[in-house]
Length: 155
Image: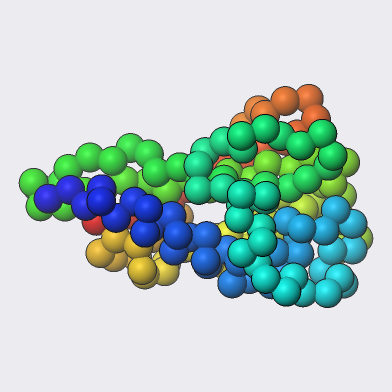
């Protein structure tokens, strides 16, 4: 039985998980290389449709340097006519000028690691735990670098 009716709820769950991490919010919001030393974002939901999108693409990439997380639900199909399997893809899109940080890691690597902590092995989407599936680089354009990480789920 397909549970595609839950897609919007599942996207909201992911968005709320993302803003539940104060440091992830800082990495998205602050363009500074010392973003972790900045104050927490008062209302993480302010990042919705500015830095976090429940779609696979940003409507228009900003000319100013920004960081984004977008998402897509892909590869859905039936299992035994009772369940649906699929994959959640979270895309990290970073302006090239924002990659370097003061902490010895790239902003993209930091965001990918934070996403993995929030998603891998967690319940609340589908009937089981979301499990890490794969991660890779993707081309965005000459100004922005892109990466994705994906998680397998069963509904």
